[in-house]
Image 1 (cartoon, helix red, strand yellow):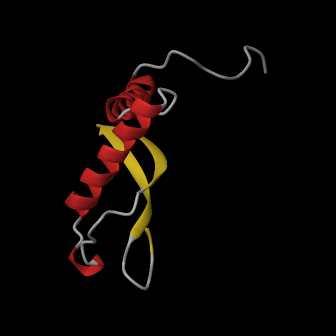
Image 2 (spheres, one colour):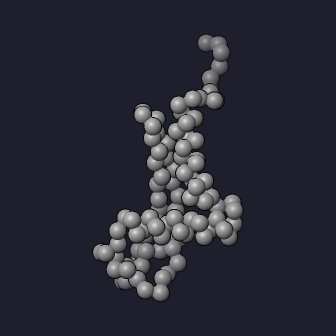
Image 3 (cartoon, one colour):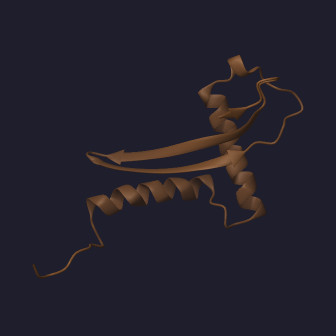
Length: 98
């Protein structure tokens, strides 16, 4: 998180969404800027749950403004599809000769 050292305002959060099934794993990352709220929660009192709520709400706001920004459900689907692609490959690389 990026924050102001003077008042603890968190202006940006870089997030990571992990998915896993058995030994298959997939991760996506992103970042959101957070508008300054009318009242600040003291930085020392922030919890992971509270910040996650802010991030999800901001992702949804940005999606409503511009559908090119993925929604929370779309981000979760990207991760799920990434895991599933590893379990049942549909693409490959290489050449058929030595």
